[in-house]
Image 1 (cartoon, one colour):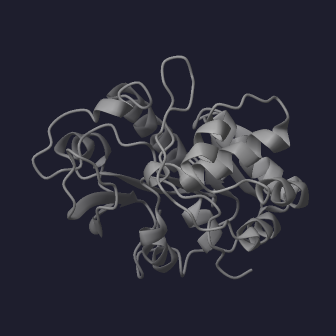
Image 2 (cartoon, rainbow, N blue to C red):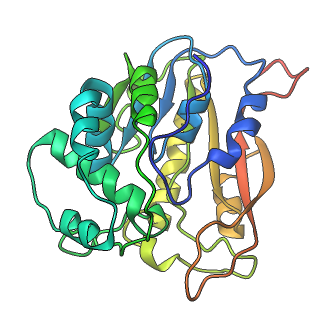
Length: 276
């Protein structure tokens, strides 16, 4: 199947990285594919897969949205097309509470497309609290239908990133784009304030142990992470480390737009290298 456009906006998404990843795996014969920090799914939607695909995330609302898009796209589209695109409607939908999975998915996708910068953030009570983003364009149902087609036979799970480590086999490929724990600004030297509880530095060390497990299994990994000295100390283990630059797309009163550096670590061999 050809490349599909993600149906979600996602702060920190990897649409900008898709060509680099495609080039990286161009000559790689891999088997099953794992993506345990799914988010907007830009890498998944950009690739074709020879065998089974396992997509997961710890965000229950996100995984529910993907599951409904996969299994029930038509009723989802019918409901979402009935929503207006205005500030008043945005806050009405944001305040809704529902247990129906399809209506939960509609709410999640609607808020994603109309919130400020496509952020997903909840308060200490677990309530979504991102302000209105002044998006007024009508949602394109073709995004849902194309994504639904791509997601057929994909296995979706709400779980910790390491939950399926025992399933990984030689020749599998794991792509990881964890929430960044440290500042990505050139002079940044500490935690990103909103992310300390979501993915701490301790979790980064646990992710390093997960990568060591992948390598022991004879599988391949790709990791993207903040270009920060602490991250380099944790993950620079003799494998390939590539420094990439992208445009900053998240703005705010205290933010600085410009070029952002990120690291990519992988044990995929370069052409001419015959070992993992």
